[in-house]
Length: 108
Image 1 (spheres, rainbow, N blue to C red):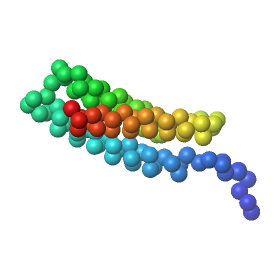
Image 2: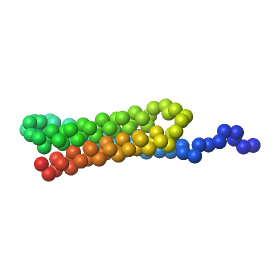
Image 3: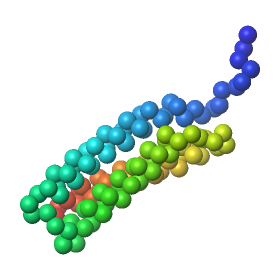
Image 4: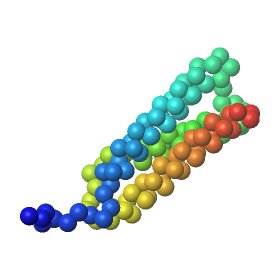
């Protein structure tokens, strides 16, 4: 006998676990970086370059949390592929923002 319910062409569960894991690793790295940076005795956000680095890390973290929420949310049965593509764009934006902030900290 065959299964009466057809399988969707795009199944989000195959993408959910790797993305959730990578978000956890990246957020852990960001927390470690920020924790070490803000506990330094010379830490202050008075310089513009420190504000840019901190802002990039903060904005990247927020984007990653939004992507994590979207990946763990119960999905509507509508257009799952479009939902995942939007989540992927938010995720990639968060990664770019976070690592751009960290990369800027190397140069300033």
